[in-house]
Length: 196
Length: 286
Image 1 (cartoon, rainbow over the protein chains, first blue to last red):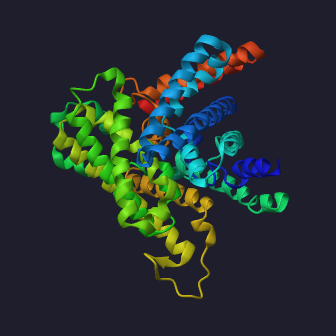
Image 2 (cartoon, rainbow over the protein chains, first blue to last red):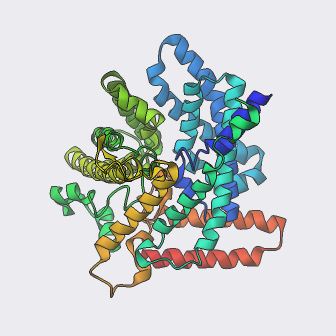
Image 3 (cartoon, rainbow over the protein chains, first blue to last red):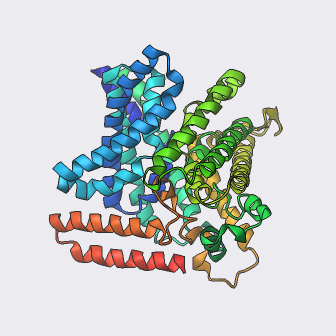
């Protein structure tokens, strides 16, 4: 149990996908303007990440068995794209309320590097199936946490008056730098907590 | 600048000379600094000049090859399945690059790690395939890919040079700063990446606008729709006449408002917010 908790929290805090690994920067900067859309996007990414790993991990075993590892990138990206499409259709059909709140974010996720990133990363780390699923959940929750925190930062930022050249994206990036610094404080925490 | 950009995207292919196509990617439409595309690798691998250069060249190769391939196949691929088709083409070239790097440059392979396969989802590559290569001939597509790729490489090298110099005191692995200067470790850490990129983008905005202070200050290029729109990468069709962002913003707002209306009585707030946002978007477009 401690092992899973260690993976989960290190994915959320220490190896935060957005702020430490720089995956999924596009939605992080694009959709974090409002709290509601930040939560929606974060939840949608979490869902897709777990599902993507649930599918890609067994596929990788097949690729390994057949000696086709070099096809990993192509297979993963196509599977994830298809999965997202199917998920949207299924959601529209069976869970309309959920589709109304998360549906609009799903097409954006197809080419989100965080999803492909987490799929490849769990393979590279050599996790077994449950570990990989927990890692996916952690990565998604970390993304959600970063989005929600940063939407708060941006709200304050909109009232600030930076120098002319810094308006818009530059000052947002600098705010992101400061947010990232706060996450640096977590490095080492996991080792101490779980003695890994 | 914003007007020139829209016309160059919407205009007929014959309007641009090859030189313009090639040079456009360097500063005016620099992918990383101007269009804010492909920020993930820009931030992640630029801790040393060698890594930045390697990533830039790998991306350039994929850009040129996939743009040419997409351009050659543009009449064959049905438009309803074009995005999956483009992704497959891009992924094939990325796999090619991965094999070459793994075989001949193991050190670079270790340094770039997971970001090498992630070129597949780099917004620049899919964005250029969709916006340019699918509408132009192979020669122009190759030039466009080269221009954008070199522009991307230059911004990666510039950024990694700054971070390596300040963060480790070296440049291309050689000691440059005298040993008594303590390296600023923060620069090679993630936080430094965001900060350096922010300052670089601000510098490029200032560089282009240093002459015209009379111009309306609220409408800098970073405010223009496509330049400040990191959402491009996730969208199926950013080249639509009504820029997809407008539609997306409306969609998002509508969904959020709907979700909120059912839960609480904040409806009025949301409508006001939405109006404000639409006004903002229109302002940027004008």
